[in-house]
Length: 218
Image 1 (cartoon, rainbow, N blue to C red):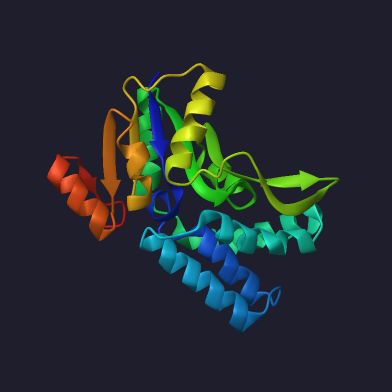
Image 2 (cartoon, rainbow, N blue to C red):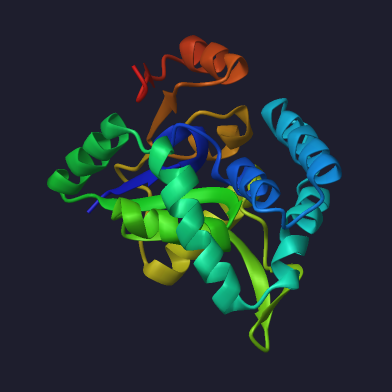
């Protein structure tokens, strides 16, 4: 059984679930519209340019989770799935997952976006497992902190290596699909890296190295 690994945002989804969650919070009046949207957009631009301070961003992004009970957050997330994530679903992404599933591959999503946002999305996509940045939960409330290493840039490699040891998998025959220059460390680690609707920097690297470049949006 080979590993088929996928980034989530702007790869399997036609948009960014993390930024979309922030916009959802604004739309529901749960955060200050001007200040939160400005910061959310600024961090997203930093991510796109490869300049994101992941710890500063996580402190910002996880703080709203601390304001509500898990039950309230779950109800909000159900609305988020319906109103924000459903329109991001890509038929070609579903077909790619089905293709790997038919081969008998193990389907793994690895994403920098926190697990509160992404685990239900991964479940809806029918993948076998997900590695995501883990928000800390204590006494039934989110604390605004994280557990372990954020799965971002080199952190994705660290988290995957931990996962491989735990699950007793290896990277023989592995593939990884991503859109982002931030995922270059993991793309370089697998046997078959694939650039999916990539940013300009990743597209140039993929072309230079002869990696496949595909679109799940055309």
